[in-house]
Image 1 (cartoon, rainbow, N blue to C red):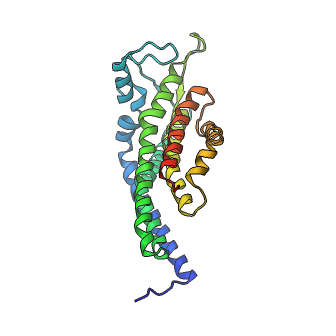
Image 2 (cartoon, rainbow, N blue to C red):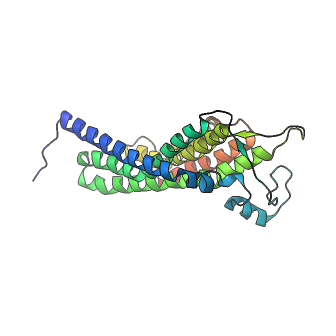
Image 3 (cartoon, rainbow, N blue to C red):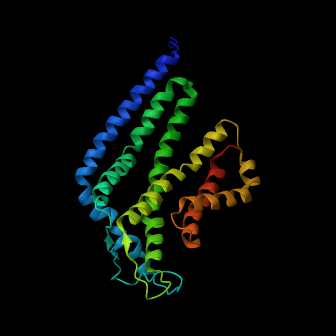
Length: 259
């Protein structure tokens, strides 16, 4: 028995209820994150400010004395954040709760998108598109993990220990720290969707492996520009830390698109 074709207004009603459900779930998670934020902030958000962070301990065990890199063998590394605005701590509490909640509901968000587009798909397309959404969810969390465990702490420690002059004392504000923290982690989650985007464009017949290989040099320039936009600072070190994962994602995209 064929399914009855939905009208434009029926699709619009479905979209409206999807948005209502997403907003409701987001609100619940924001409230939960707001209640848990003091613990999350001390043990997760501020973890890269001390030498106990996993990446620092791992690099410390590797040793090495490269003068261009931070001294990861320093077990006394600690950065104290300062607040210079009366409302900053309260506003940071709210905004961080929102971004944490947004990351946590990402699987549900992709599920709602899948549920909305599913009626328009043929039976042979539903499985592949469903796997694509699952892959996209995995890549988003992988990107956030790379941002949190690698890109942000490496960049943060390098910049906080870099000295133009020993007469200059670094004082990192709460606003500056959170801007860098949220930007690098959340954006890394988004850009890790590049292979999924490449796969979708391939399914539509817009790109092929030959296309990606032909324009590899052009892509390097575009990714460098994108890295410069993503990074909150303009230093070459931070630029390369962000660029390298993006380039690896480009090479992964070549592997998964159609010939």
